[in-house]
Image 1 (cartoon, helix red, strand yellow):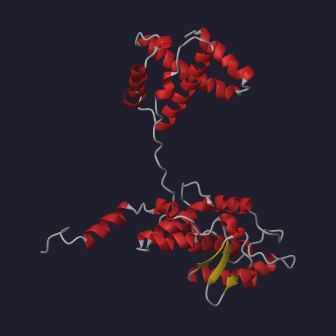
Image 2 (cartoon, one colour):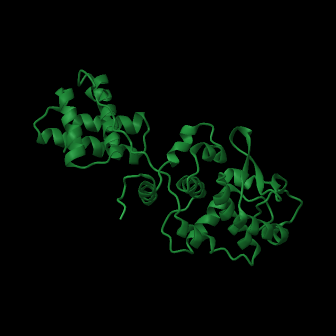
Image 3 (cartoon, helix red, strand yellow):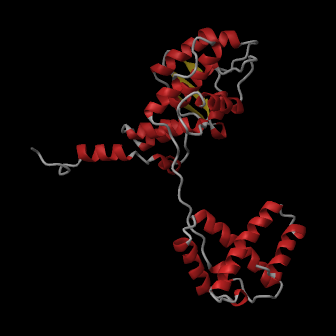
Length: 299
């Protein structure tokens, strides 16, 4: 479909706005789809009314089954196109400014199930220094819920071995204290006595070291986790934050209150912690049948 106004607009994007070819083509496809729709429905796109835009929105949602993200992208392209048409005195007003975008579905945090974590934890070879370090990375991320940036900055002097506590320097240079359990304690002690001593090349106090004996970076942790996941049957794309999500989700699933989880995660606001209130369906069902007095009849 040939349209002179669209061609001029695309030239404007390319030469005056200096948009990339990819972006220009994306605008072109979205606007062309709308112009073809108008042609099919015998609508003059230069004399379009608000009611027409509403019907087009329904067409995208109900007939085409576009996602909210896709719809919002198309509406954005059309707002921009009509803004250009108004400036060129081709149309009188930009009716797409009156059309609200679609709400984006909230993405729930991705987390590991218990059995997936067990499989992942068994991958590192704890007879080797790097294997001990990698196992400790997994155990500590999961046991404490710390961010990867907080993890790599842990120093041996921050750890209270007798009380199994670690001082964490979080966002805004605010300190908090996290706990760790016996599984983490076991591999931590092994790494401190064996693996870290073999990796260490200087008097650095940082807990996690790379193969050169230097401080491990956030990028290094992400690389290690990606390599570990390849050695499992899991198909998930892993990130350090997934272990933080797992920590929070599993605490809540086992009955921990939201305020305690907030403090353990180092969240300033409780609202940031509320994304973790997505307890599993099985857990909800279990709680309901065990807690609600009329959920089931006595035999």
